[in-house]
Image (cartoon, rainbow, N blue to C red; front, side):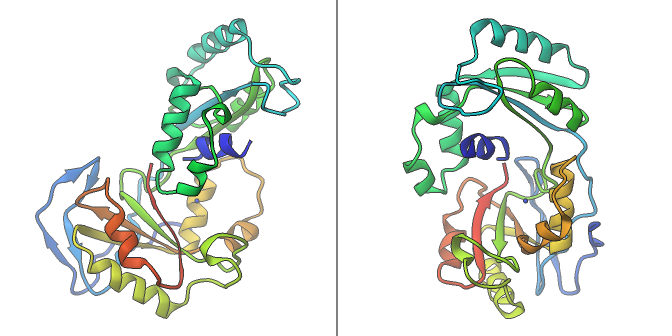
Length: 276
């Protein structure tokens, strides 16, 4: 189920978005829905005030013989069950753009979304990929997902709101959290102020970085809560594994190589990832 979770989830109130002293603003354009007007200065920008998304995505993952969930009973979803599910989804209020994603497309999407994680791609095969229905939701309703998950032929259902940063920035540099059990930050505490300042200096010297936002941990926790509406996870537990993040507006959103190269060897960096 780790792969379906990864595919499904392709982590305080926003601070005031006043431009810090010394910030320079130059003419720019809109790239991939993100305003890339140049705003560089001696300190990063705070998160924008909003908006906080209410819409989101609904993904209904289907059963296969490789998926060991109680609702599947060791059997793959039948053609008739797929037909009924698609018909039901298209009739649901607030749901639009229902489409079926077969195993080939699922595998292509997986490789695109996780192109920065070579180890994960190398360890995955097309036969590992689930088939699923994907749809847009105007207003996310967690109870709806719970009901759909009990239908015949359904392995799991994920319904979540759009990430706050999607459409506001192209890439994210995650910093170490207070508790780190795995990855680049394993065995250490959260990124220190000195480490964060060094990371910011490295980022502001990368050509093509047009804006740098700094997201406090409280804002990141609020974003997590907004995305996974209905989650019963403890806020303190979420906060303990959530670090600060830099969010970047880039001249070339498809190329993160200059970012990863500039940050190589710097302590306090957990991951560089695209917003998707």
